[in-house]
Image 1 (cartoon, rainbow, N blue to C red):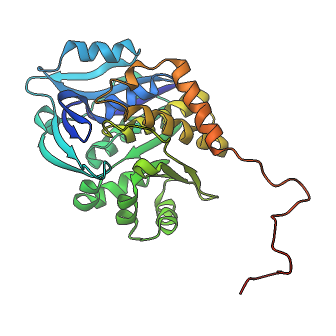
Image 2 (cartoon, helix red, strand yellow):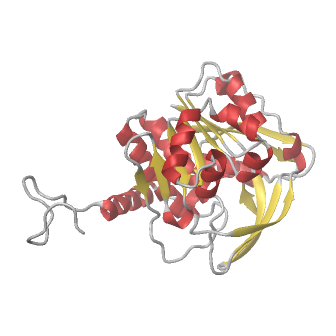
Length: 321
């Protein structure tokens, strides 16, 4: 089924303990669309400047991503510069942000894009996210949204309006606590369920992700890696794997969401192995299948057999004191 992402396509200059890369392809919609393209038929709606390289457009098209919604405007492409901590690669400092043509981004969807079955509203101004959702006709089968503290602190009312209307919300731990006003993640997820989204995905960096859907929470750990090169885009690749699986399978059951989260972790693990989209854009089906199988095996353990119990210490019954 069709999958639409509306977000940013950018050029990033990144410094990490593993090295540095200037003016590399980035942006939430870029990472998401490439990660999801191994499973679904993604379309990307974003804005780029006249400095955006044709080779980078060709990369997206080589993954059979519909780029008809990639609007080219006079001016420079959105650019971001950041540095990751030497001791904790999960922390980063933004050194420079140049919105350029992205400052006036106003998504206008084609009739075909409006009919997309699945929609991912990447991290952009919540007023734009709401405007995109209003353009959809009919409402997609599933709508997911990502955001950040900048919008939680600066546009909470607008963000709440759009969050009320989505099915899946992606946030990191700090953002979930801040948005819900709850220190405990379970309580925070419950508060967000009451606002609207049935599913809350809590991104936890190198610790994986938690899925809350009103039932038993599901933990999708990060896959252990020997070397992390660049965490930029890992969350968007997680979302791409997640939404790509759901759009391709059509399975919106509890089991389907858990498999989607597992595949999201797999795609996020590939993203951090290189700068930009170098690794995630060069995968084979076997690469993904092998790592998904590795992930499944990592979580597997034999349950206690029917009729048996845990090996309790003899002489103890009831509550230990």
